[in-house]
Structure formats: C-alpha cells, structure tokens
Amino acid sequence: MELLFFLKEDIVPAQGDVWLFNIGPILVLIPVFLSYLVIPFEYNVILANFSIGVFFWIAVSSVVPLGLLMAGYGSNNKYSFLGGLRAAAQSISYEIPLALSVLSIALRVIR
Image (cartoon, rainbow, N blue to C red; front, side):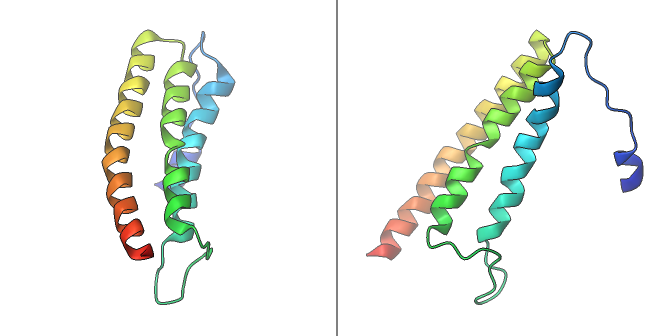
C-alpha cells in the first residue's frame, strides 16, 4: 500500500506554480521530523542533545504555517489559497497556547 502511494502520478494544476506547489508539503513535513530530534525516548537517549531543546522545538514548529500557505498559494486557485490560509490560521491558533504553556513550565524549571 505504501509503495502504491509513492508510485502515483504527481498532478500539478495547469495554472499553478510548480515550485511552490511541490515545496509547500515538504516544508510542512521537515519540521515535523526535525521535532523528533529533541524528544527523549528513554533516560539519556535523545537523537540530538541540544541545550535549548524546547526552544528549538518551538522555533521549528513555527515554520509549518509557511508551508501550508505555500501549498495553497501554489495551486493558483482562490479556494485552495483560502484552504491553505485556514489551515495556517488553525496551526497558529493551536501553536500559541501550546508554546505559552511549554515556555511557562520551562521558565519555572530554570529557576
């Protein structure tokens, strides 16, 4: 089933920007995979031991709305752009309370 997914034809809208249409989903997936670098899987088992792990995670996850906007804008269709804009707004609205709660805990632990 997974192999079938990778063998499907890549369809780009006729009036769309091919570069934006293809780079948008990639810009969404890369921060998701980068965020796994700072998640501890066991005690002292971290893929990349940054001293600023939480702040790195927040910075990397804030790139996702840009990819959503690029994917919507790349199709050169007003409804796709509105869908990308809605998805980016939803991502930002979930990200702000999450970042504030994580940062408040991080500030409390630092003291």
